[in-house]
Length: 66
Image (cartoon, one colour):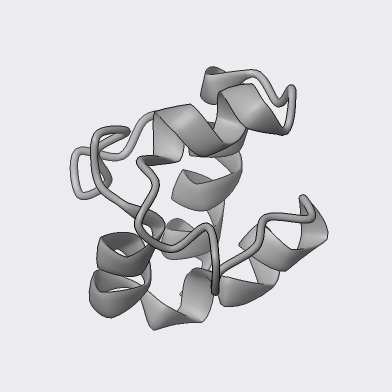
């Protein structure tokens, strides 16, 4: 599932500014929203060894569930 409202190039800070309800999804993946906030979603997924598509799907599902 893709979500045109979320761009992998966005920083974690931008993602949370636009979709604050996604904080629990990031936390579930162990993504640091403080120090990791300026990093792009794609960079964070690589650092945490999370498939980018998997992370984007989880974020998209969470935005659809609202």
